[in-house]
Length: 328
Image (cartoon, rainbow, N blue to C red; front, side, top):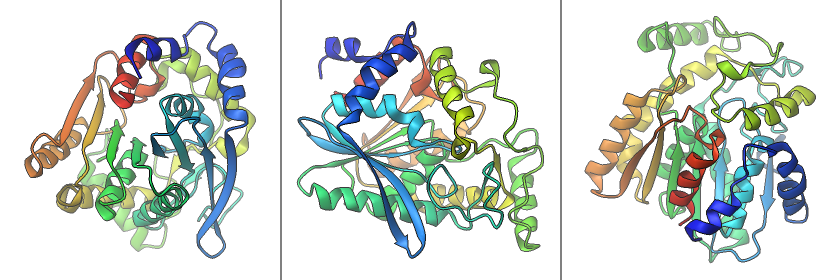
């Protein structure tokens, strides 16, 4: 795609909601199907498949903490316009996918027993995509928590992916004001005491809608659009992590920094937000340096001025540069 095409493709801030209703959703309507698959018996993974008109590849999307496919419809639209079929699952504990909490009525809590569950579920869907279109290369795109999961997946199945694109990846989450080492120790103690499903201190069930000023978005129009969807659908109202989830984030961080970087062979592009209140930027830099040391020139870190954690929820100027790097 050329620069002019990308410029014309990006939805403007003004009239964003109307553009989603009149441009994006109609475009997706006859290209999108909703599906379920099972890697483990009785544990249904929800995923959507969207087919491009003239495909040159497949994009598998790994979303972040508390996110759903609904939040990524704009991103999916851009991938489709860029010539990529899209496969996107919802991770365990999110949206329509199976949950592990003993209290299945608590839709606020995000809990997982082992981070490798996220990785294996993602790879399961990616292999479905590969089987459906065996001649097309697969681009793996992950944001935040989904970025950490995607990096682990690329290390576990290095021959499956042709590119790895990470958007503000959670190599390690921020736990301030509690130091990371102490937060991890507390999480481990709760898990050893069989209290892994307890809410991490300071977390709470979904209640009052999040304010834009406190959000990870720069684009208020994009924030408002998804916030409205989230308030209307209980399955989108994840809002808290368990001590089990936090302990698995510790284990994922250790794996990424100690082992995963040695096994990733495809080119890696990492976008780092200018201001990020959710993930450690230092850990991100360390990870990219390790990747570069293993394969010089194979990994690039791009800092995005003026952005917050959700880089894909920025204004038009930032998004044009962002999608140019991804799609060209």
